[in-house]
Amino acid sequence: MDKLIQGVAAGGTIRVLAAITTGVLEEAIRRHQTSPTVSAAFGRVLTGTLLLGATFKDFDRLTVKIESDGPVGNIVAETTGNGSVRGYVRNPDAELPPADNGKFNVKGVIGDGTFYVIRESGFDMGFHKEPYVGSVPIVSGEIAEDFAYYLVKSEQIPSAVLLGVLLRGTEPFVAASGGVLVQMLPGANEHIITMIEDTIRHAPHLTSVIKEGATPEDLLRLALGEIDFEILEETQVEFRCNCSMEKAVSLIGSLGNVEVASMLTEDKGATMTCGFCNETYGLTEEDLQAILEEGNLGY
Ligand code: ZN
Image 1 (cartoon, helix red, strand yellow):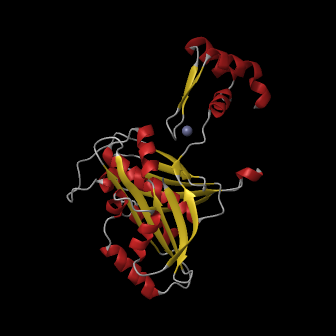
Image 2: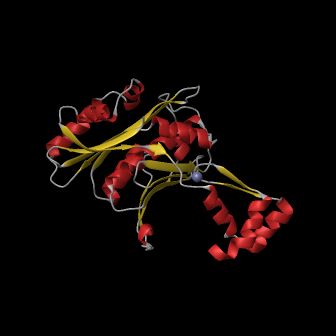
Image 3: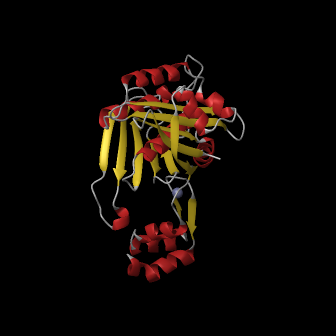
């Protein structure tokens, strides 16, 4: 079962988070049919978004958007902070040969561009507050480094980020997916930061331990070495979209009566595919007729 944990270490001066997202990525691949290299990139973005989202309390929706000029185009992931994440990529079929080290060429498939984090809040209360938008150039393209760079540059939080994806050729395609986020809070000891960086540098690959059944706690132990930590929160995580037939009907209705009437007479129905999860909703002639009859009341 996929899980995210967060806690503190070193007397509360370090915030630590870890997540296993093997099932999250499996579902994302199932829905978007992404190529292996795009799956590796997508998995890292989905995991990074869950970890980053868990460090903020004051938002309704946090979106990480990678606008890239590489073959994948854009990658978007969105979390509502309760352990759910959804997302999509512009070009799911993009693929490149492996990098020189035999690993997925994530850097190549991403290319250059901009890394955005958008935090929106106030929906529930009916406010439309200006979203908070932070952005940095893509410095690495390997994703984990880009999350770390964003946190340091845009949020002024020195951070270490590890994100890993291990795939196999047959279903289930994801052998392991997960990540660790360590953030230095004000007052963090320089010496401890160096220790953690050193531990991470010498630690085994995240994905090899996840594949062997590691828990998020094990991942933190791996990243923190001898440093004690305390877990404060634990959340189940999953790829989950909030689209529905009701929303599809509402969106079709919002196109206006002329458009709906033309769907009815010319197409004898309508289909809507959710960009975030690829779910398709089919509206029958009766559905469209109902929209025309009731339409203007609700909108
Ligand atoms: Zn959806």
